[in-house]
Length: 152
Image (cartoon, rainbow, N blue to C red; front, side, top):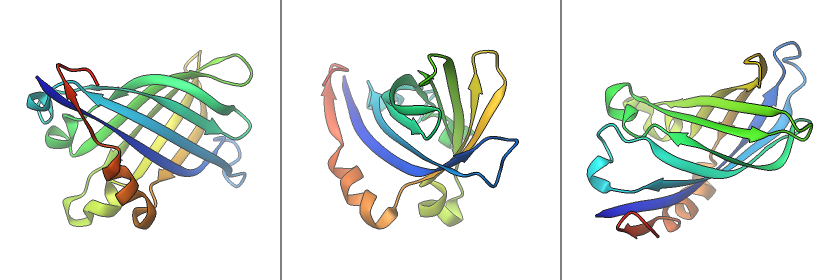
């Protein structure tokens, strides 16, 4: 079984719903693991892990979650979902998606809109992340690695 792993870095901003003008820095460094290429465009939900920074909430915190690769065909979107522990020790959930538009493919696949929820399910933040296409594309492509038997 042949799979693939790759990394993606996205930067942008986030704000609390009650303070949309108070934008703060946000970044996500994601490692994606797809254990089998035969599942790539099926119902694949890939495992992701990495680090997230949301200024004032989470400083370079580890996360684990999923990336809905298969949804790109069914729904023209790529959902990201992960959980992390904030600087305050509380549990948080990041839920977002890239909304894929075939007429604007580079822009739509490099922009991720998301919401952040606390452990009680209350919304605590709104996020917009982007990959700098000029700088990130080559770096992104160089992170692809084959996985044999679903392992790197």
